[in-house]
Image 1 (cartoon, one colour):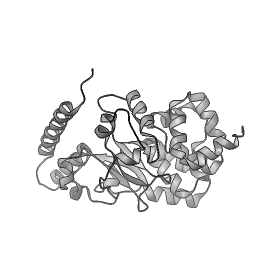
Image 2 (tube, one colour):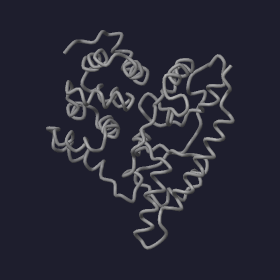
Image 3 (cartoon, one colour):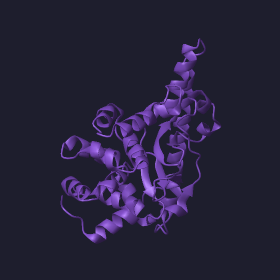
Length: 271
C-alpha cells in the first residue's frame, strides 16, 4: 500500500468531510489511490462521506475490498457506510466479513420491519461539513443539477446530523460569506424505528419533501422522501382494508407542484 503523506493524513483525520469532498470531485483513479493509502480504520469514514455516484464507481471498479472497510472500521463508521451502499449489495458484503460477531451486529442494524422508516431509506443526501467555506459550497452546487441538487444536509466532523442547508439564503449572498454552519436550518430527523404510518401523518410534510434518518447517536443513515413514506403508508392502509394510496399520491403531487412553483418564483433571475 502506498503511504499517505503526513499533511494529507492530518487533513483526512481532522476534516473528513472536506477531504471526502476533494476525493469526490477528483479523478477516479487518483481518488482510489489516495483512499487505499489511508489507514484501515479511516477508510470507511471517508468513503461514507463521498457522493453516492463515487461510492458506486469504487464498488464497480473491483479494485477495492469494501468488506475490509466494513470489517476494520469502528462499528459506527461501518454502519454509516453500509447505509450508503445500495441495498442489493449489502448482504454479500456483510457475508464476506470474517468476523462473525460483526456480521451479526451489522445484519441486525439492517433489519427494520417494513412498517418502519428504516426499511424505506433510499434517498441519499449531499453531505456538507459545518465548517466548509460557503464560497466553496456555492461553487460545488453549481456543478450539480442547477434546478434540483437533492437534499443538502449539514453534519459535524463525526457525521452527526445538525440540520439542512438554507440553499436559497446561501445562493442569495453575493459574494457568499462565512461557513456552511451559518446557513443551517433546523429540520427534525427521523429515527429508523419510527412507524411509517405515524410519519405519514406528521405535518412536517406540508413544508418538506425529504427528511433525514439518524441512528441513536444522531449519525446520518440516509433519508426518506415524502413519496416513499406516503406510498408505504398507503400500501399498509390498503392491506388493512382501508383506503388505497391514490389519495397520498395525489396529495404528494400537489404539494410537489406547489413547491416547484414557489422555488421558481424565489429563484434569482440570471443577468
